[in-house]
Length: 317
Image 1: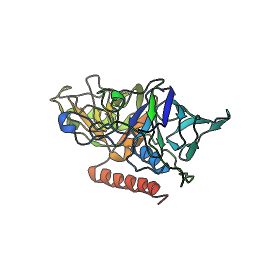
Image 2: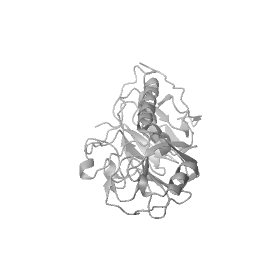
Image 3: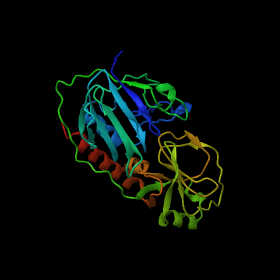
Image 4: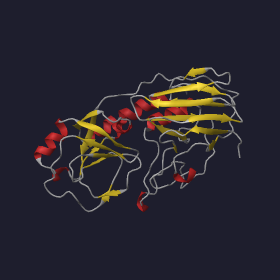
């Protein structure tokens, strides 16, 4: 086992390990989990010469303060994040996202906060030394599945880092800007016709606000109530990331990576795959509007988003 590790001096609000998740256990009620923002997750690994599915540290709002012990590493931070590097001579270096850095033994990374978004990512060359649980290193704190007994990290805990040579270290930088477009494109949900014509009109023409009730399971919205004219409780059905459920109070909920695998609230719409990374980063108070697209348009938009992601991922090939 490696003796290089991060000592957690401050854990941050919700610091976990994430990768691509578990996509093979849905049938027994285990959700996929994985990085909330898959594009930023992959870009962080690209900058540190990892495979794109290597596990990274995901943090929300205020991130961790980490001290490196017994080693020297190459690391990168992605997202819209304010962070500093505290060098051994007490110099404080302002960090910049989408580029890599060398961190020496005894130096610290201070993830102060995210800015206009919620989640950020920290990768290290070689990755972290972790216990794999059901073919993934992702932590689901609600179900307590994953490394660290499925819990978010706390002060004084250690995150061990795999040995990695810096002999061929190259400075890398990606010219990337996060999108803050507040239009959310959706296709109709399986229970779209449970809602009145007025509710449908409201859903596509009125504004909704992201509330503080937002986490890795989902985002609760506040806005005009949506009238259900058939039944507010239905037989539980399978759910996917991006599903928009409407409970009895009429306020929509957008499901994210740690959502339950089944649910009994009517589903008015589903966020298209091309918009999921962006939607997951909406901070409380963000005003959003929904725009309907058809399935063919949704597939084309996802293809375009995938190609755009590949463009960034091939930047250093």
